[in-house]
Length: 454
Image (cartoon, rainbow, N blue to C red; front, side):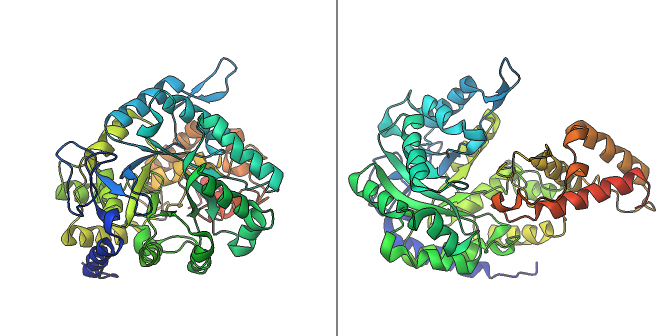
């Protein structure tokens, strides 16, 4: 295997980090347990915990990302969260040691906080940590920002928030950060709220380049970031797409300052659980008992500077699989890390779109179902159902399969052909995807299929 990165360096860094930040690398048996040992391991079947070095919180390494709760139709045909199923998922998670729940005022068209609050309220407040965000993307006046902040307390039915984030820094750089949080006085306000105890930990989530990340970390002395949420997985470790910095760089910079990280997108929006078949075969050959997804979750949790790994678990089967991976976590060894770097190199050969189905780009003013178009394309690429040329042996079958599945997956009035390139979606994409360009590329592919012009 030809390596672009020395994995021995990774393990050396991981070991140094554990020593540097002490309790963060510790694994405890339950919330509130003894954190004095840095090598204690949970018993078989028990959740692995990491200790927040700032305040001693015992945080489950598996965190629940509340952006993908199951949905149903109401009597008027509107998509709403299935509260009963959400309750069952949260109950099962808490019963099996999960205690970190991450939401936002904008998740699921504004429904996530309320549904999460209803489900969590049925459990003792001290048994879980709530993370939510100041998602003031479009209207960042002081009045609206404070209103959003206070509404989160109401939605979540709580009088304090354990982990509060400035949502999605990086895309607009320091200037945009100043507009959203400094010029309107919100940073001063939030720091006072932390001092008063209504915010226990203050941090930010990040999507962007190295320069932007460095700028925000330089503010640590002034604002004292208690934690930072970053995108980390075995592909983005050294192959981050778009204008995003490699996860290796982000994590190492946090380690230098002793700032714990919370991990988002460990599966790259599900793409690392739906890899091409021959990649899946290699992963299963190495670990027949583990799922394809478990490799990604073990990678995210292997670094001792990681406090919590978020997963948006819509279905009970996903929750149970992740519980198995982290109860307890078995960190990857050096050989396994090298193997995953090899897998990451293979993944770069597939021209998928780095869409994580976050739906921040929605709604489209022209009714286009942007995530559905991109995800359908990715699914066909990963399944080997993309016709490359009319000369291909299986061209006719692949052509028919794509066109039929495309019409079934996306109604005609919501397909790519309706895109006019208004670019409204671009500024909301945390992956920095040039969405109109990708939509036009897919539309050209569809039209070429229809006209047999490949």
